[in-house]
Image (cartoon, rainbow, N blue to C red; front, side, top):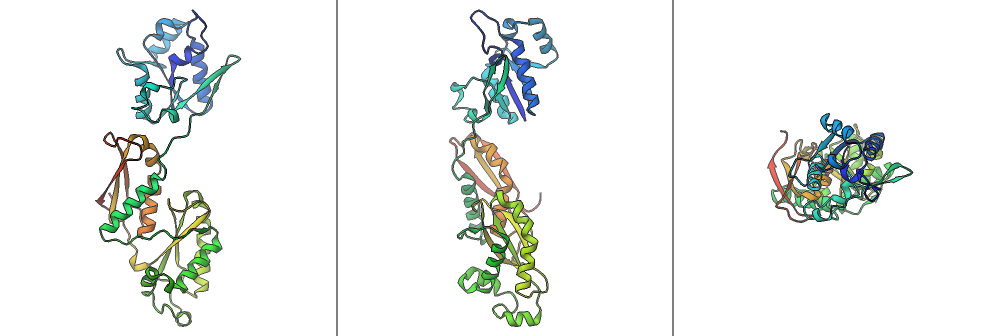
Length: 337
C-alpha cells in the first residue's frame, strides 16, 4: 500500500526553537515504511527547500523526483489529502487536518501517526474506518427488494443455526423430509419425483434434483467449503439418492459468524446467470469499504435469489450522496459483460 509522507510535518518533528527542519527525519521515515512493506511517496510543501538543514541534498532528491514538491499556489495539506484519496493510500503525518474533515471524512482512518525516540522513528497505526452500521446489509436488502419488485422470489432470513458440517447436513435432511413446515420449500420440493414418499424414492433409486446453498458469514467461508463434499455425501446417503446433491457454499452478509442458513432450490429453478447486474452509487465516505465488499454483496444476492453465477456489482462514489450511509441502487439487465 502507498503511504503519502507529509515530508514537511516529519522534517519539523522535534525542531527546537530557531532550529531547522531535518532531512534525516524524512529519510528515516521512508526507510521505516519500506521495512513495514509500504510504498512511501514523499511530498513536501514549496517552502521546505528553503528551510531544510541540508539544502543541497534535499534539492538533489527533488531533482530525481525522490521527493515530490507540491505545485506552486497549492495548499500542501489539501494536495496530500486529495492524492491519498485518489490513490486509496495512507498518510504519514501528525497533522490531524481538522479544517478538512468536512471534505475528507476518512482522515482518521488514513492518517498514520508517528514519533521519534532516541532519534529512531516509531510508526503508529491509523484508526479503524468508521462505517455506517449494517450498510452492507442495507444495500443487500434494498437490492433483493428490487429483484422482488421485478417478479423474482428471494430467500427470506430465517433463524441462524450453529455452524458445523453435521449440523448443515442434518438441517438439509430435515428441511427436505419435513417440507410441510415450510410452504415455500414445499412448493419447490413437490417438483422432485416421489417427494414425500421416500420409501418409493429409495426403491426407484432416483437422482438428486435439488441444489443446497449453504449461506455462511464471510469469516466462515473457507471452513464451510471444506465440509461441502461431506455434506453432499451425507445427504445423498440418507435420502438414498443415486447421486449426491450439489452443495454450494456462499458468503452471506446477513448470517452471523459461526452460524449458517440453507436455501434449497429445485435444480430446474436455478438461474444460470443473474437476470440483473447491480449498480451501487455510494457516499465518498463509504466507497472504499463497500467496494472492498462488493463480491460479498454479489454472493449474498446470488445465494438468496438462487442464481448460480453472481451478479456484477459495480460501485462508484458520488458527491451528491451528502452523508455517510447514503446510497442508491439501480438494476441493469445483465448476466455477463
